[in-house]
Image: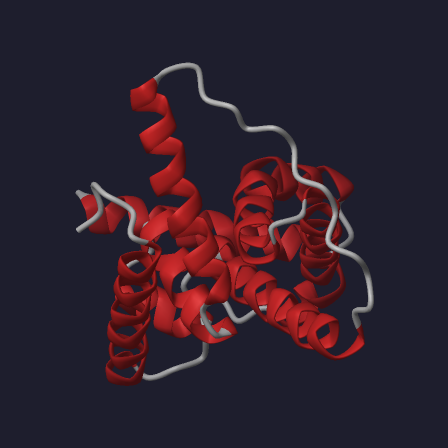
Length: 191
């Protein structure tokens, strides 16, 4: 039953991309409606900035429009392709920013908790977020695709254009780095 649903989605994706390649604006709107939120989430988690995430999401969808004529039918579908494009664009932006950014760090919004429990949750969440942001770019992408986007290892490996074993090794190193980072921060309640 699950394989039939996946096969039907692939067929629908193939048909949808064929319509996009024929410059069917309604088909592009449908693809954007289905996938824009997911693309934005991946970009936001990678970049940490709303405006940048919106730019990357638009660019990813524009790539679908511009490259629909190159679509290979029977592939993994639009969502995995868009995740791959989005991750690559984010990695490019992060590399460029690392070498060209001379911007000051913007002030953070006040995140005052209302109760002790919420304070602890916020502290743990922030520590994990900070540690994820401190990871090397490809490790960060592996964590985001696997744990936030709940993509299976094989799909995440494909998004990063890696072999499965290499991806699993990358993810293992990322988890070890995250654990060390959170422990160094001394945050209680994280295992």
